[in-house]
Image 1 (cartoon, rainbow, N blue to C red):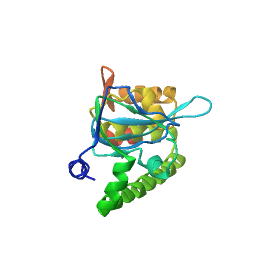
Image 2: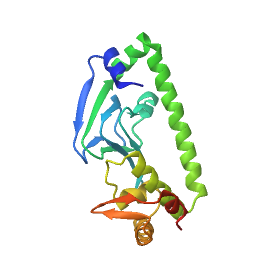
Image 3: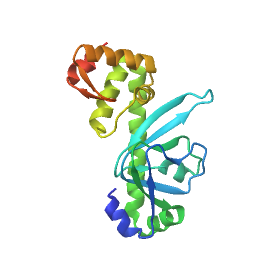
Length: 201
């Protein structure tokens, strides 16, 4: 769904600007808007009953977020936080309802996005179950670095995203650095050989 088209059919949208680390919505909050990411990155986190944090996914420009809980009329199942300076367009419930009735393609696009989200979640879950911690970490490093190169990913974030531990991520990245597979650049890193990284154990 193109954001430029959305702005044309919904002129009275709300603009939201977030700094790095600011929260868009908290887990358990009641949805009031559907959010469209104009620029920046937003991370989705879930905190379990024992306090452990899981990094679920990343939203990039032109992505929609908060829509599943919004249309299901359920409280948010996770917390969304800006990973860097971020601009968001927020559409209220009334605006969504009016747009769906006036422009059927809007509802069709939302349905397509929901179906795609479900498919990606199922594939990710299947992948996590079938792979070792090293494989999950290596694939997460490649995915996060290639998909979102402007973001400096911490080892904690990589561990959460790959459903691994900080210690295991540190061990694998240290080994990869010694074998000239990745190169450390300050707090960031560069992947020198993707194929070798994916084969690293």
